[in-house]
Image (cartoon, rainbow, N blue to C red; front, top):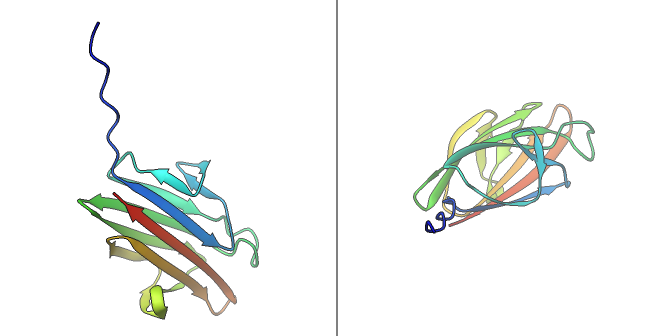
Length: 125
């Protein structure tokens, strides 16, 4: 018999935590908080922006794995000021090429609409 097919390659694991807890989707399909990255690049949607208190933003995150590091591009509807871990300002959405080698904290705030949202991304190889 032919040898078994080798397992599909993975590019690491991504754990997503959102406060408040919202739906996480990949390619329009709801997924859990931890996923195996089967492609070096992809897109996620976190939240739907349907409720100012429990689901304040629609956040689109594109990721790209390069070696042991990952980079993100972040887009939010409505727009948001983004702060990183420790309150360090990262800019206003859209944000491109946000590099990480592990844990990334994104605190999204829209002061005009009085919205706030926190996303933590943990990447492991």
